[in-house]
Amino acid sequence: MPKDLMPGRMVRNGAIALVAIFAASCGYAKKDYVDSELARLRSEAQAGDQALSQSLSGRIDQVDGRVAALQRELQAFRNEYNVKIRELEQLIAFDVPVYFEFAKAEIRPEDEKILDRFASVVKAYYPNAVVTVEGFTDPAGSVAYNKKLGKARAEAVATYLTSKGGLDASRVRTVSYGKARDRQVVPGAAGKAEGAMANRRVALVIDYSGAALEGAAAKPVTN
Image (cartoon, rainbow, N blue to C red):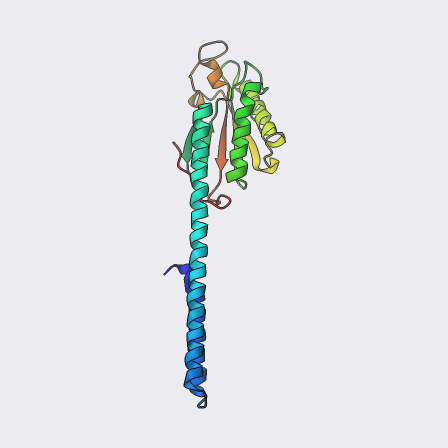
C-alpha cells in the first residue's frame, strides 16, 4: 500500500472500529442500524482511497510530463545551438557557444538568442536554482589581467540574463577562471590564432542542489 494512503485509511478504519465498539456498548442498538453504519463507513473509505489514488496518479503523470518536456527542451537546445550539456553532482553545466572578441567583454548580437533560450529553460524548470556564469579568456596577457577580463565577461552575461532574460538577480552569480590552462578549449590558442575565440567564452551552470523542479524531478537526462 502506498504510504500516502496509510494515514487516511488508518483513520477510517479507526472510525469503523469506534462505531462497532459504540454499538457493542449500547445494548439497545439495533443490528440493522449498526450494519448500515458500518457499510456506509466502508463505502466512504473505499471512495476516499480511490480519490486519493487518482490524485496521486495524476501528480505522477504531471511530473513525468514535465520531465519529458524538459528533456525535449534540452535536446532542442543542443541541436539548434550546438550546446554541450554535462550533468555533474547536483549541477547541470551548459557549454554554450557564447564567445567574445579579443580583449572585449561585450556580448555579440548573434549570441543573444542562445542566452534568451537558456533563460527560458531556467525560468520554466529551475526557478529556484542558482545560476553561475563562468568567464574565460585566451592566454594572451597576464594572469591578473585575464582574471579581470573573465570576470567582466561573466558579469556582462549575468546582466543580460537578469535584465533581458528575466532571471532573479539574487540567484545569478559570476566567477572568473581567466586563462586557466586546464579550462582552455584549445590550449595555448590566443589572439587571432585558430581556435582562440573558443577560449574567450562563458559557461553557464545551473545549481539546483537537490531542490525539486516546479512540479517535476530535478535531475534530467543529459549528455
